Length: 389
Image (tube, rainbow, N blue to C red; front, side, top):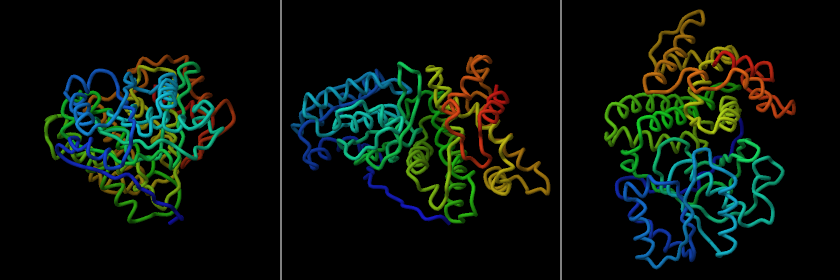
């Protein structure tokens, strides 16, 4: 087991009607001026916007609003938020939404206290050392940004999608009421299920000796999401299944399922280029289209871990050859298809001609390789993309 630091400072309020405490929670922290940050119409349609506003007013909390966050959150809106924070002396940001809203809030949070473009954090030219605190009311189980140190932003001018990790990115608190996800569409629910699974799959399939406790937590989370995902697709208002997905969303990306392991999320890196170039592609859908091809090409880098995965999640008996591994990959690909996810880049209307550019972008134009279970250079990235096509 490698040395590790496990830091989860985010306070979680989990369960029914916890969002009704939002005014009291913010008041107890003593914040004076809040930026209320959200997406487009969904929180206004389901009544959450009105509830949040009423609770802020009841507690005499001054606030201004910035809506309009899109999937694959954009740098241009982040810059608007930074300007608002500086002009209005904002001391707290409340993100009401999913991973895109939370990541946008994190980027605003980091950018509001510096005199340069926060995109410099995303391209690793600057390191965050201070931020405006962020709180979250989560409305979709997917990205895990509510407890993670990660922030992913798309530069809408250059079409680059980049992530940066910093402990400054971890939210102060997160309110998680599974009931708020009842109205999430089947497609977005499926995208979320995929993203949750992928956050742990990419941690589990990594180099190094076994870490029995971490491995069992990871496999248990993947199996629980697999089971709950099937229930939720059939019955969107099943509270226990929704609760499983929401809690797994947080634990899958807060560091728990990688304690003691080194990992590099290559499929995520490839997908960032995909949805950066094709803004209409949902992150989870891109991951579903890419992962089976990555797995079939790279599994020999850690075959024993793939065997354990196939056996634990799908009850596939171990074999002396690799047939159990390949069957497990097939089973997960079939699951993605059954919940409405694509099995190929072609289904996402990605052009064959763009694959070389995607591979080149993923390698930062020859400046890096992906240190995965099998090292991925330009040619290997292109092989994965072609197989996924």
